[in-house]
Length: 332
Ligand code: AMP
Ligand code: MN
Ligand code: MN
Image (cartoon, rainbow, N blue to C red; front, side, top):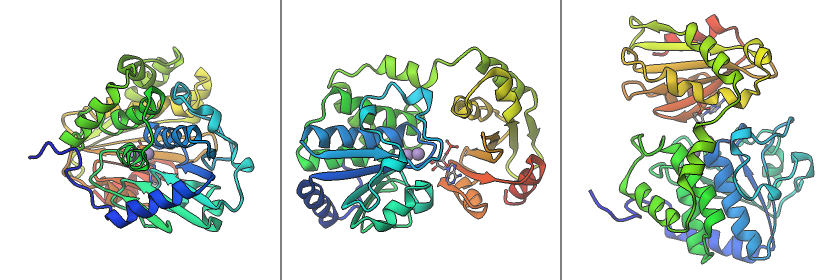
């Protein structure tokens, strides 16, 4: 084992050089991250956005959702002033950059803008990344897209102050599961040390991300846990549950408040795989899956039209809960 912070980096030097060239030469940059942004997607985008704006570049940042809304738990991230609604996004960006997006589909409505961009720089850490950019900075070994965002800023020679560091740290700490997942490498910890040295507040970041919610969350969590099912006979052992629109409506709880319930469900010892189906405001089921290692849930979810990482993946289903679970079970 090595303690070199750059212990693995499959992005070729010439691609980094090209990225530095493109970004340095641009006076206008359009940034995007995946729909239903998490802290890694939004944090990486805002970090790069703030650093580029401080350089005097014109920066727009967005994600392609019809109902454009930053999840409540990510509103503490600095740099929100860079965000524009997708309708106000450059239709034909000269230079567009995407963060934490493995396939153009995950850009939502901004996939159209990406398709027209003169240069499209893809910054990502999904092994499943399709390389849809004109330049792809993709490192599946990186714990988070924030790792690549930091490297880009360093290579651009841009300072990483407390606000930029806060955004990067939120991405890193989220995607490593607070330094619990298998992505917790010396490289990840070395990065955390560099970011902490800027004076950011890790306690506040952790509280914003995981340790607060409206009271109604307790009721919805209770309902979800109450109907959890353990199926030790299904392949590697499966635990699953669901949260309906009605559950949330009764407590006036927005969709993004239920994202964390999977972290309670997945602790079940008897199951290798944990699943939660969350009904969104359009009535579609957003399915989150987690594995302890025996099953590659990225493969399972990809078969069902989604994607993700080997131990954390998801897909969208328009079928009823039982039917969705049937197709999932068949793949375990
Ligand atoms: P989540 O369960 O929402 O925390 O997502 C875990 C991982 O699965 C993330 O890395 C996402 O990239 C991926 N993922 C979640 N939902 C989808 C989806 N509908 N389509 C493709 N990938 C998804
Ligand atoms: Mn993500
Ligand atoms: Mn990520």
